[in-house]
Structures are given as structure tokens and as C-alpha cells.
Length: 255
Image 1: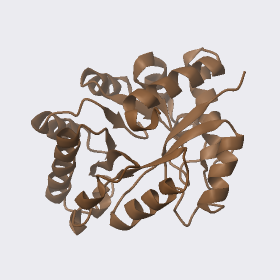
Image 2: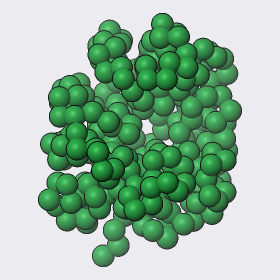
Image 3: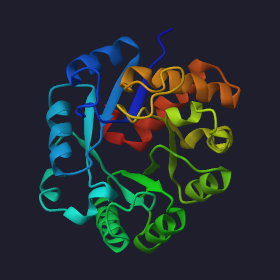
């Protein structure tokens, strides 16, 4: 039986990748990754994500502005949402760890993208770091989209429960394999099966034993196998669960 995975979050256009997008995607296919979503973080990367997705039947893209770049505004992004390969809004959210953009600007830009997701009934991909309370406050004020994904989930069970209570999915990256990530492992073990996703965030956050090297979508099975171990289930079952959930979280990739 072929084990099939979905990488719900990668940045294969990034110059930190070891290989170009065509090679990275081909390597992922060979590793059993059947579908990939390339994530936009600003106007230029969204355009790159769409260009890549347009060349591959098994690759899709999102339109988004990362909180680091909130200060630059949303100009030009709305016009890209209707592209046939767009399957979500984001990544967007709040990052109070780096504070590369003013926090008020971050909240305003996050709220605007939540509105896009609600208006278009598109999935919302959230980045949150050191900003859990405000992230939940903005979501509650704007209305959590019915398909919301907390990308690269880095909370504990308490945060996981608050996400799931809002109907959201938790997407686990290579961080779950890191030595000091006991909180994230607890959340991965607790996460309800119908809310569980896996991702690479390539070229960032390569899982152990590849840590320190550029990440790639071909390593999503490594993340998935580790999550399976944490949950005391088989790797095939974890792949089946997360692939099914990915197609529910992002209906645009289901065909």
C-alpha cells in the first residue's frame, strides 16, 4: 500500500531551498507527498506561489500577508484571490515575538484577511507567535472562518483546546520533533483526530534528524511518522487521517 501525505504549508519559492521548486516538488512526489500547498506571505511571494501552482496539477497556493509585513499593507493582494489555484487566505496573524510590524497594524491586517476568508468562504491559515490572547480576541471579534488552520502549531494542550473549540485545525511541523518541544508533543497527542494536519514549512524547521539543513516537502513523511509515534498509532493511519483532513480543511485540493 502506498502511503500518501499532504504538505499543507511550504514555501518552495524561497531562496533558502536546496533545490528549485520543480526539483523539490518532484522529490516530494517520490516520497509519497501527493499534494502540496505553497503559501503566500506578501504580494511577491503570493505571485510566486501562484506561478508555481499553475505549473503543477498537484500544487495549490494561498494569498496572504504575514504579520511581519503588515506595515506594507494589502495593496494588490485582493486581486489575486480569484485565481483558480487559490485555496486559502494567509498566512496571516500576529507575531509579537519579533514585532517587525506595529501591533495595531498587525491586528488590522489580520482582521482584514479574516474578512476575506469569511466573505469568500476560503480557509484561513494563521501564524501566531507570542500572541495567543490577541489572536483569539481578533478571531472572536471578526468571526472565525469555518475552516481555520493554525499553521506550525506551537502551543500546549490549553492553546490547542482553545483552537479546537473554535473549530480550527492544528498543523504540526518539524518543531514537534525538537528536543525541547514537550508542550507541542502533548498537544499533538491530545489533538482530536479530525483536527490534525502535518506540514513542513519548508525551507524552515526541518525535522530531526535533518535539523540544521534546509527543509523540503519530501520530509513531511518524517513529521507524520513522528506525530504517529506521539499518538501511538500506525504511520499509515496517521497519513490517512491527515490527508483526509487536509482535503476537508482545503476543499480546493480535494479534486
